[in-house]
Picture 1 (spheres, rainbow, N blue to C red):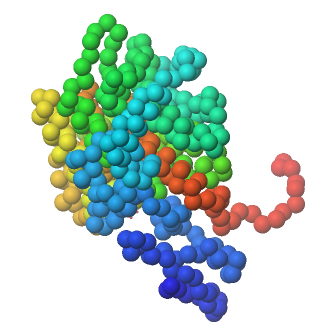
Picture 2: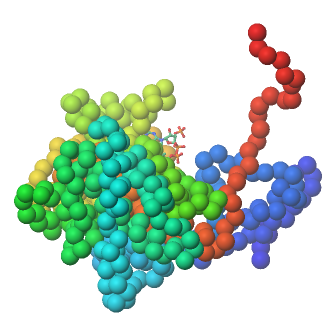
Picture 3: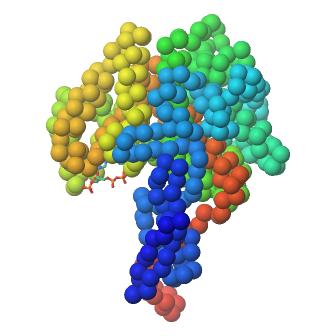
Length: 419
Ligand code: ACO
């Protein structure tokens, strides 16, 4: 095994170097504080591996993303979201029988306890859907036992119920009655049915929308140690139950620098449209360090050349608009803006490219999904990834997550009340 040497105040310390299956190199500093008294400082964790994981591989420089070894492009083209859920959570692609059994189990847990419907009555009409989602997920832990034996059942319950919770929150926001889940429908189809059906009319889910959403959910399903997944692992590391850990992940995802960016992109494109599509002005604002404005949907902590998911979503965007015979002025603005930014040295030199969120909102709009639900859809897609990480952390006996800090406050001083 190779070693890395660190020199502090003329003393040398040696640390093991670990190599992942894709040849990524990590220095194991587990003994750093014990042997040197020092810690590492890495705000934002850009250089810190918090765990080893066998779920998802990303090579940000090459634009590679694989779930359990399978390239995202292949999964997006050939798999269903239910298959990908199984793959992420259980580590292998399901056989036909396993898939049928898993699909059946998912249909058996879609209902919410009737009492939970009363929670929706308590939320104000202006409630943020992500806050509702997080609250409702956390409240599931008050209904179900969290014993070790129930772990798998709780995983299936949560996978099955999140779409009901999400669809009910949408119905509540537009003042329509809840539409109950239907066991004869496929997973994504059932979600769209709960979102768009009304009691008085038959509703058939358009196949173009069903297929596109299935693929979008696959593209969102996991992304290794991102902000929300790390949050799930962090909360789960204390031994908190699945529902509490996932509820925290939902909250972390809601922020505009993470999953909330898909809504922020649409707001930004709309503002640009209303401003006469003045791309140059917004690119200049994004480059101006005194202006807090950023090009939403641009840039990524890991991808520095391109985001493979953004490429797939851009293609889906054109396809869905064509299939549904729709146009969207925001798509033209997005494409123009992308071209302007991609030729600009500011964005090139910093490796800023469209990310997953840049085009996803336009596809959702084409499907008739409201902007307020975009981040909820992200959460629906990301759920199997969060669960897979929570499960892996428990199965591999992870330690309590507890980072250190460098204290920069006052030295000890005597208590004296302020005047
Ligand atoms: N517009 C303008 N400038 C940007 C942008 C942007 N969207 N993103 C990064 N930069 C600049 C920064 O100002 C910084 O410039 P500097 O070196 O001159 O100081 C440099 O690029 C590096 O940016 P950081 O913020 O240090 O990069 P970090 O890896 O911390 O941030 C992030 C990544 C949060 C995604 C950032 O690119 C961003 O804010 N993008 C817009 C929000 C967004 O689209 N988020 C979704 C991310 S994908 C996801 O979570 C699903």
